[in-house]
Length: 345
Image 1 (cartoon, rainbow, N blue to C red):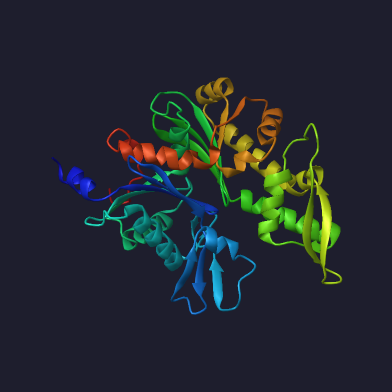
Image 2 (cartoon, rainbow, N blue to C red):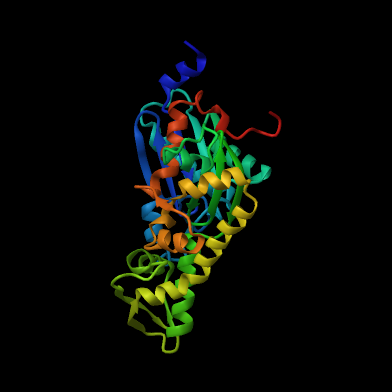
């Protein structure tokens, strides 16, 4: 028995999709065990963790001065090294339960446009948080594996992974990213668009959680057969009093239209640089959408109509990346080509 397999019996290796909005953890041979917001609540002096994940997110916009609520990842990469380490430490410990004799091997998904400095920050954070060994996988590759695309074959596979802070678009062939485009726009930008729209058009101020709820419930990228509406509670900018306003899906569509257009423009720019043979494969096979942003109503129709290509949304876009990294974790030898190498390797 190899030393690696022996260590694996004493620990529970995990794959982590470290996202700007949500962090998911896949346990080897155990499936997805954690799916929580990437939010940490700390005491005012920053020395004590008050809460991590769902409970911390519930405090956003409602926290007293004694509690700081922090989103440690920005645009898909670490913005606060220390807080990310605290979050990872909590996730890794929760994934191990009684198996803590040997530190686990950890796979972390990262954006395709990540720099060497950012890679080192992710590796160091995971190692300090309790990992014995850290491997990195590009999010588009993990998404393609999770979507069951034939990445090992000489076919052009185009994947667009729309997260909270970034949208990753990549053409994959023979287990590698041939060409990619990473834009720092995603679900979080849509939430801000909705907040700004309501403030400018209706003189009402809403919090980020309310904006996210509006996007999920009635947001759309393409006209709906039956337009939706909902009541929104916020603060009147002029009087300062709480007010209730009715907003429609067509208004939300107008609010986020610029961000949607920027995402589609990123697809067009990628096609301009895609080799003809791979472009021909994509014209036949289409574009695969993953990530939480793919759940936006009518987004696939909007992209399909604009770029005139087939567009497919995977059955469970939110978990696609972590499922793909989980497959890598379950058979790391078969997928060793997709692991990102260090500069010194």
